[in-house]
Image (cartoon, rainbow, N blue to C red):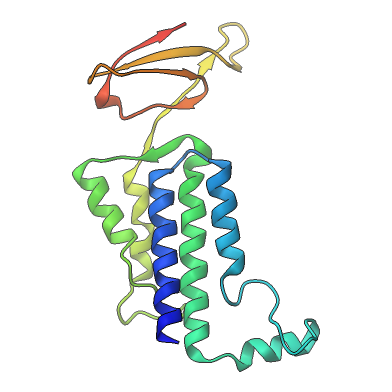
Length: 186
Protein backbone atom coordinates (compact mmCIF):
# COMPACT_ATOMS: atom_id res chain seq x y z
CA UNK A 1 0.00 0.00 0.00
CA UNK A 2 2.89 2.38 0.67
CA UNK A 3 4.05 1.82 -2.90
CA UNK A 4 0.60 2.58 -4.29
CA UNK A 5 0.28 5.71 -2.17
CA UNK A 6 3.73 6.93 -3.25
CA UNK A 7 2.88 6.25 -6.90
CA UNK A 8 -0.37 8.19 -6.54
CA UNK A 9 1.47 11.20 -5.05
CA UNK A 10 4.04 11.10 -7.87
CA UNK A 11 1.30 11.06 -10.52
CA UNK A 12 -0.44 13.98 -8.82
CA UNK A 13 2.75 16.03 -8.65
CA UNK A 14 3.53 15.33 -12.31
CA UNK A 15 0.00 16.39 -13.25
CA UNK A 16 0.47 19.65 -11.32
CA UNK A 17 3.85 20.24 -12.98
CA UNK A 18 2.33 19.71 -16.43
CA UNK A 19 -0.50 22.11 -15.66
CA UNK A 20 1.97 24.78 -14.51
CA UNK A 21 3.82 24.52 -17.82
CA UNK A 22 0.55 24.59 -19.80
CA UNK A 23 -1.20 27.13 -17.53
CA UNK A 24 -3.87 29.23 -19.14
CA UNK A 25 -3.60 27.46 -22.50
CA UNK A 26 -6.67 25.24 -22.18
CA UNK A 27 -4.77 22.67 -24.27
CA UNK A 28 -7.22 19.91 -25.20
CA UNK A 29 -4.71 17.03 -25.15
CA UNK A 30 -3.50 18.06 -21.71
CA UNK A 31 -7.09 18.37 -20.51
CA UNK A 32 -7.89 14.87 -21.78
CA UNK A 33 -4.88 13.47 -19.93
CA UNK A 34 -5.77 15.25 -16.69
CA UNK A 35 -9.39 14.18 -16.96
CA UNK A 36 -8.33 10.58 -17.52
CA UNK A 37 -6.01 10.73 -14.51
CA UNK A 38 -8.76 12.29 -12.41
CA UNK A 39 -11.27 9.60 -13.36
CA UNK A 40 -8.88 6.76 -12.60
CA UNK A 41 -8.17 8.10 -9.12
CA UNK A 42 -9.52 5.86 -6.36
CA UNK A 43 -12.89 6.94 -5.03
CA UNK A 44 -13.82 9.01 -8.08
CA UNK A 45 -16.85 7.53 -9.77
CA UNK A 46 -18.64 4.41 -8.60
CA UNK A 47 -17.13 2.00 -6.13
CA UNK A 48 -16.84 -1.59 -7.29
CA UNK A 49 -18.33 -4.02 -4.84
CA UNK A 50 -18.58 -7.57 -6.02
CA UNK A 51 -20.55 -7.05 -9.21
CA UNK A 52 -23.22 -4.74 -7.81
CA UNK A 53 -22.18 -1.15 -8.50
CA UNK A 54 -25.22 0.84 -7.44
CA UNK A 55 -27.18 2.06 -4.47
CA UNK A 56 -26.36 1.20 -0.88
CA UNK A 57 -23.88 -1.49 -1.86
CA UNK A 58 -21.61 1.10 -3.52
CA UNK A 59 -21.79 3.35 -0.46
CA UNK A 60 -20.98 0.38 1.77
CA UNK A 61 -17.98 -0.42 -0.43
CA UNK A 62 -16.65 3.13 -0.14
CA UNK A 63 -17.16 3.11 3.62
CA UNK A 64 -15.35 -0.22 3.86
CA UNK A 65 -12.17 1.23 2.29
CA UNK A 66 -9.18 1.69 4.56
CA UNK A 67 -8.17 5.12 5.93
CA UNK A 68 -5.21 5.15 3.51
CA UNK A 69 -7.51 4.76 0.50
CA UNK A 70 -9.67 7.67 1.69
CA UNK A 71 -6.53 9.75 2.26
CA UNK A 72 -5.35 9.07 -1.27
CA UNK A 73 -8.79 9.89 -2.63
CA UNK A 74 -8.94 13.38 -1.17
CA UNK A 75 -5.37 14.41 -2.02
CA UNK A 76 -5.72 13.05 -5.56
CA UNK A 77 -9.04 14.74 -6.09
CA UNK A 78 -7.73 18.05 -4.78
CA UNK A 79 -4.54 18.03 -6.85
CA UNK A 80 -6.29 16.98 -10.07
CA UNK A 81 -8.88 19.71 -9.57
CA UNK A 82 -6.11 22.25 -9.07
CA UNK A 83 -4.26 20.96 -12.15
CA UNK A 84 -7.36 21.35 -14.34
CA UNK A 85 -7.96 24.81 -12.84
CA UNK A 86 -4.42 25.91 -13.68
CA UNK A 87 -4.82 24.61 -17.24
CA UNK A 88 -7.84 26.89 -17.75
CA UNK A 89 -6.52 29.74 -15.60
CA UNK A 90 -8.69 32.84 -15.99
CA UNK A 91 -10.75 31.18 -18.71
CA UNK A 92 -7.63 30.98 -20.87
CA UNK A 93 -6.71 34.65 -20.43
CA UNK A 94 -4.16 34.32 -17.62
CA UNK A 95 -0.86 32.54 -17.28
CA UNK A 96 1.67 32.11 -14.49
CA UNK A 97 4.49 34.61 -14.05
CA UNK A 98 8.14 33.90 -13.36
CA UNK A 99 8.93 36.70 -10.92
CA UNK A 100 10.39 35.84 -7.53
CA UNK A 101 6.99 36.42 -5.92
CA UNK A 102 5.26 34.19 -8.48
CA UNK A 103 7.74 31.35 -8.00
CA UNK A 104 7.55 31.63 -4.20
CA UNK A 105 3.75 31.54 -4.14
CA UNK A 106 3.64 28.61 -6.56
CA UNK A 107 6.09 26.72 -4.38
CA UNK A 108 3.87 27.27 -1.36
CA UNK A 109 0.66 26.46 -3.26
CA UNK A 110 1.93 23.31 -4.95
CA UNK A 111 3.99 21.94 -2.06
CA UNK A 112 4.09 18.19 -2.67
CA UNK A 113 2.51 16.98 0.57
CA UNK A 114 -1.09 16.02 -0.12
CA UNK A 115 -3.64 16.04 2.71
CA UNK A 116 -4.98 12.79 4.09
CA UNK A 117 -8.52 14.10 4.59
CA UNK A 118 -10.43 17.37 4.16
CA UNK A 119 -9.77 18.28 7.81
CA UNK A 120 -6.09 17.31 7.77
CA UNK A 121 -4.02 20.24 9.03
CA UNK A 122 -1.08 18.40 10.56
CA UNK A 123 1.30 19.10 7.68
CA UNK A 124 -0.93 20.74 5.07
CA UNK A 125 -2.58 24.15 5.30
CA UNK A 126 -5.54 24.35 2.94
CA UNK A 127 -5.19 28.14 2.63
CA UNK A 128 -1.76 27.78 1.01
CA UNK A 129 -3.34 26.07 -2.01
CA UNK A 130 -4.93 29.39 -2.97
CA UNK A 131 -1.67 31.33 -3.21
CA UNK A 132 -1.30 30.44 -6.90
CA UNK A 133 -3.54 33.44 -7.70
CA UNK A 134 -0.66 35.75 -6.75
CA UNK A 135 1.38 34.21 -9.60
CA UNK A 136 -1.37 34.71 -12.21
CA UNK A 137 -0.91 37.50 -14.72
CA UNK A 138 -2.85 38.80 -17.70
CA UNK A 139 -1.25 37.70 -20.99
CA UNK A 140 -4.10 37.40 -23.43
CA UNK A 141 -3.73 39.51 -26.58
CA UNK A 142 -7.16 40.31 -28.06
CA UNK A 143 -7.65 42.31 -31.27
CA UNK A 144 -11.01 44.06 -31.48
CA UNK A 145 -12.99 45.50 -34.37
CA UNK A 146 -12.95 49.30 -34.12
CA UNK A 147 -16.63 49.70 -35.07
CA UNK A 148 -18.25 46.84 -33.13
CA UNK A 149 -15.77 46.25 -30.32
CA UNK A 150 -16.03 42.51 -30.95
CA UNK A 151 -12.93 40.27 -30.84
CA UNK A 152 -11.54 39.39 -34.27
CA UNK A 153 -8.94 36.93 -35.50
CA UNK A 154 -5.87 38.86 -36.61
CA UNK A 155 -2.46 37.37 -37.45
CA UNK A 156 0.31 39.00 -35.41
CA UNK A 157 4.06 38.60 -35.28
CA UNK A 158 5.87 38.91 -31.97
CA UNK A 159 9.57 39.67 -31.84
CA UNK A 160 11.15 38.53 -28.59
CA UNK A 161 14.20 40.20 -27.01
CA UNK A 162 16.30 37.13 -27.89
CA UNK A 163 15.54 37.70 -31.61
CA UNK A 164 13.01 34.89 -31.96
CA UNK A 165 9.89 35.55 -34.08
CA UNK A 166 6.49 34.10 -33.18
CA UNK A 167 3.51 34.15 -35.55
CA UNK A 168 0.18 33.87 -33.73
CA UNK A 169 -3.52 34.41 -34.38
CA UNK A 170 -5.40 36.58 -31.87
CA UNK A 171 -6.85 36.04 -29.35
CA UNK A 172 -3.77 34.29 -27.95
CA UNK A 173 -1.50 34.05 -24.94
CA UNK A 174 1.75 35.93 -25.36
CA UNK A 175 5.05 35.32 -23.60
CA UNK A 176 5.99 37.48 -20.63
CA UNK A 177 5.80 41.17 -21.49
CA UNK A 178 9.36 41.75 -20.27
CA UNK A 179 10.57 39.39 -23.00
CA UNK A 180 8.72 41.14 -25.85
CA UNK A 181 10.50 43.57 -28.12
CA UNK A 182 7.67 44.33 -30.58
CA UNK A 183 4.22 43.27 -31.79
CA UNK A 184 3.30 43.65 -35.45
CA UNK A 185 -0.03 43.04 -37.20
CA UNK A 186 0.46 41.00 -40.37
